Length: 216
Image 1 (cartoon, one colour):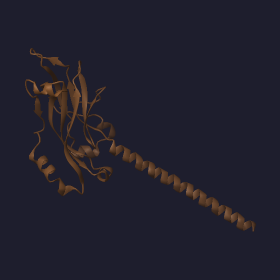
Image 2 (cartoon, helix red, strand yellow; image 1 turned 135 degrees about the vertical axis):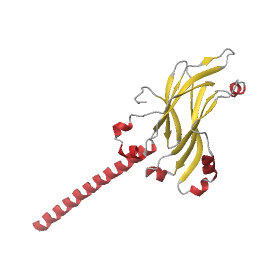
Image 3 (spheres, rainbow, N blue to C red; image 1 turned 180 degrees about the horizontal axis):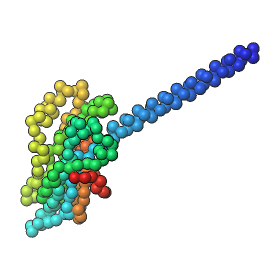
Image 4 (tube, rainbow, N blue to C red; image 1 turned 30 degrees about the vertical axis):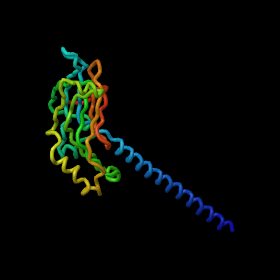
C-alpha cells in the first residue's frame, strides 16, 4: 500500500513537473510570437531625410521655404545579407537635392503596395516608390491664390508600372491587400527642422529627427 502510494505520488509529481515545463515552453513560444508580431507590424524604415528651412515671404507677401532632400542609398542584395546590425544603423544617403517651394507645408510620398497581414507576419515588407515632393497650404484659399504650384518629381515620378499594378490589383488579391498613394506632410516652422521619411506597413510617415546618427 505504501509502495503504491509512493509510486502514485512520484507519478503525480512528474506529471505536475511536465505540465509546468510545457506551460513554460508554451509561454516562451507565445512570447516569442508576440514579440515577432509586434516587431513586424510596428517596423519603421528610414528611406529619406529632409531638411526644411524656416518659413519666409517673397516681395509680394507669398509664403515659401527652401528644403534639402536626401534619399537613403539602396543596399545591394549581398550587403543586405551580410550586413551586421550595427552596420545597418549607419545609413548612407544619395546626393542631396535642393529646392524652393511656395506654401506653408511640405508634402512627400508616392506609391505603396501593402501585402496581407499573414504575409507581413512571414516577413514580406511593404513595396514602395517615393515619386513626389511638394509645397502645400493649410487652407484652400491660400492654395487657390498661390503664385504657382511647387511640385517636384522624384525617381521618375509615377510610372506606367505602378498605374498598371493598381489597375490590375485583382490579379494579386491572394497576396496584395491594397495598392495606393501615400503622402506625409509637416507644417513649415519659424526655424530649420530635420525630418526623417519612413516607410511603415501602412505607408509613409514623416517625423522629426532629434539627432543625426547617419553617415553620408
